[in-house]
Image (tube, rainbow, N blue to C red; front, top):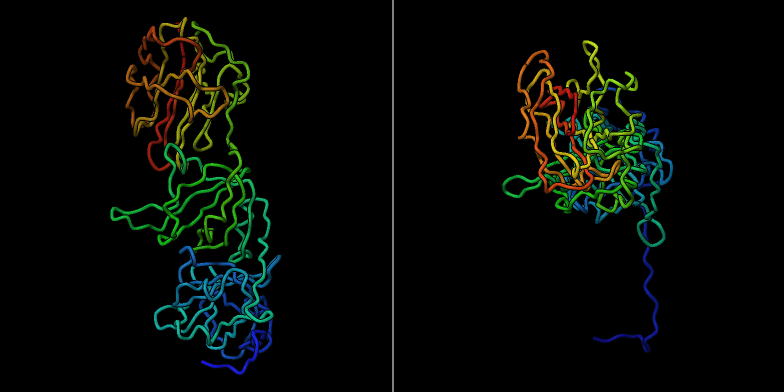
Length: 445
């Protein structure tokens, strides 16, 4: 090998980047405005517009689709293009400035989302064949290579704000978000569920914000880090807004889109608990309490704490008798609520209470004692001893209500000493056990 260079000083040969398509003929917003209300529109002329990539299939959560928006900051429109090609992140990483010539493609609404795709004999909006992607999509030059910009997610105040059709296929960030407690309690779930063979399944995980709004993080069964446990804290989440028909599905690009490092926010905080008194002898028949507020929030001697769902034990009156009641009828999702009664176990000998059920379709009441629960603290972290078997809890009637009657007597073991709590736990589900439970005459002697 020889060279005509007589020394070791030389310059890098110039590299020229040239755009495949000419300058845009229209804005992306004007292009998207052509979408018909039904069906699709075949683009028959050169319609060229620019956009910026916001999705990434590097971690497997976007499958053969590319989401892009018209601006890097404060976008006005987002679109999705269907391509029969994987590993699109290698050609178009997040922030890539792209240019599209839509001539020969179809524009339409597919399952709730405005999409751009190829002519297909089966689907209204087809996937562009891998060999033809370059005919319609190309990067825009920036210096000597692809122009890659920083995408600034649109800052929203709540998850409710994200459910806006104008934000579909745009990148947003919502603060003060956490996974619903049912996703991390009593067992912390993974981002994906798996079948018996270990194959990941498309999985929804529920999130909530500090205002009580909810949304779904949708994860593909091919999500590479789907085996990671969900973070239990609170923080910011960034996602691409998406919708499948009428169901909102928010899509993360990778785990780095979820920054839940703060302390969880309790959207349904415990009520009461501000004047706890531990005693070894008392009778609580609820007759001294006013009918309002019904969820006992102003009664400081006890703690009323829904940890799943938003239902508190409520004060009720029937035949001039007051009692507390809880049920999951006409609800949605899971419900777990505790009524915590303080006890001096050293001085106490027995526990009694009256119980009644209505519209029984499954056991909903459990009774525990605990000595390490901190009033108004996280009851899920307390060590609970199940004493439900010491009592007779009715399993009828299936329609209507029975009557309040003694549930039995629990003999407090002499080894149980110190201050603690009796916990009455209601567990139900809007789609499962909806039994109504009534409690009265809680007595420690």
